[in-house]
Image 1 (cartoon, rainbow, N blue to C red):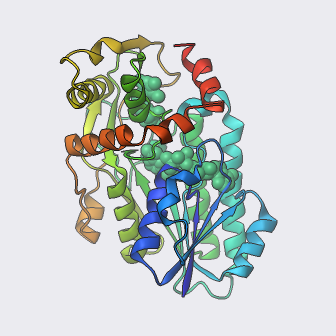
Image 2: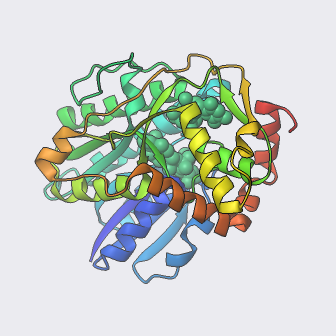
Length: 350
Ligand code: NAD
Ligand code: TYD
């Protein structure tokens, strides 16, 4: 049986990826290493936690000793590296936390992998999951391709760009068998409600203000999380070593249009009069250094590996809203305690 390490498997994307690998590949033993920060939640994996090919290890990717003993215990043939600090707003208040996990943690992991795989690189894969935010910001036109020069502008994107550079450096210097993908904004079930879509779903359900930064004209390119992890699966198994693949859905929305679409869908699902929830929209101070537009050109992935998104956005949003309406206990759990303090610091008492 092959052993595969997933880091950050208790987070949003990591939990979908872990579920996919545990259920689709019974011949792999999946080890999920997660520190369980505020964003990591084992509730996200309840349905697969007793699967015979799954183990959870609570730990930090910065802990070199732990990594070394894990690699001795399991002869991992693959690593899928998702663990990260992932929220731009938090990176603005605490950049060092992002340097620690995203840069130091990634390099610690790379270093361990290099040592443990030293004489047996053949057939192994270190897959680094990254973001389109490393490319910076676009004007009204154009798309990010794999050739676009890095130009990160937030502490989050700077830390992810740095980690991407280290992954490539380990490929060129030590011949570590790496793959990288850079994906656009994800949405879907188990998304922590500090990010725009789950935050607004939670607030619409609870009749709380919907904070729109600036004029709401910033554009994001949204992809359903299950389509993202399908792409990762495809690249992990069929992508070329040393290559980078951009993942995106050609699905650009201004923040304000997106939030209005959420209001329309949720009003209909809750039997509220049309226009009710739009009244919750509240324009607030803009994010510092707010990137205007992200948009991915995923032609390489389509042409070389035949990957395409499976869902239209309105349908994906509808599924996502239905999941949040059916999982209010999950939402209440993650929005209690420490998250409430963060929310009050960010937006004031609602
Ligand atoms: P998330 O914040 O939901 O989850 C991150 C997970 O990593 C959590 O379970 C957390 O406990 C764990 N973690 C954090 N620090 C750790 C450490 N030091 N050691 C071990 N575990 C640690 O993030 P996400 O949205 O699922 O993002 C996962 C990856 O995908 C990140 O690398 C992110 O940069 C990338 N990405 C995210 C998006 C998006 O829209 N969310 C888009 C493109 C790429
Ligand atoms: P977010 O979900 O934090 O993702 P990212 O910053 O990584 O793209 O934010 C998506 C967009 O929504 C971004 O332009 C910032 C904006 N936004 C708001 O307008 N209000 C909010 O409360 C949040 C969290 C984000």
